[in-house]
Image 1: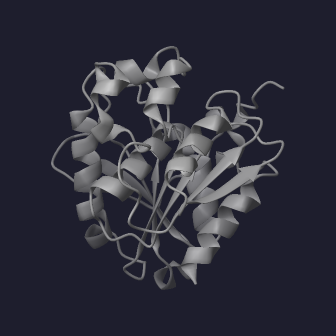
Image 2 (image 1 turned 135 degrees about the vertical axis):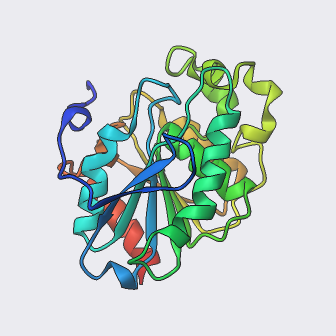
Length: 244
C-alpha cells in the first residue's frame, strides 16, 4: 500500500509565538499553547526528514497544532542539518533541551520529548546520552538502529549522509548500541511503514526491553504524525499517560 503523504503539504494555524533557544539565526522554536496546558508537561517535537538540510519543520506543524488543541504546550524547534557532519545537529538538540523548558511558559516544569523518523532517532539519542530529566520520550517510527538502517539502505543512504562515515564507526550515535534510555520511553510504529520498516524499531526494543513497544496495524510512516489518520489517537493516548 502506498504511503499517504498528504500531511506533508497540509497547512496549520500560525504558532502563538516564536522563541529563540540560542543565538544562531536558525536556533528558534515555534510555540503552540493549548487550554489548560500549564498543568501538563511541555511537549518538544523533533521533526524528521532523514536529517536532510532541505527538509524543515513545516510538515510537523499540523501535528504540533493538534497536540496543542488537546491541551498541551508544544514547542517545534528547527535544528541544524549539515550533510556528513552530525555535530551541529547534536549541539542544537543539547542546547534546546537545556534552554527550552526555562524559556517557555505554560507548562508544569516537566518535559516530554517526541520525535518522528530521524527526529525519533534524535529523541532516543537524547534520552540515552544527555542525562536530561525527562518525563517521557515518545519515538514515532524512529530510525532507532543505525546499523540496520544503513544495511537496509533507508533514505537512499541517509545514514551515511548524516554521519559522514559508516554507521559502524559511530556507536555513540546509534540508539540501539547506546545504553538504554534513563526516562520512560515508548516507541509507536506503523506495521505498514514502507519508509522505516518496523523491524528497525523491533531491533532497538530487543536490545532495550524496558522500552514500551506499540505496533499499530494498518498504519504507514506518516500516519503517526497525521491528526486525520486513524492511528493518531494512539499518539495522544500515550502522551496522556505521562500528562496526568
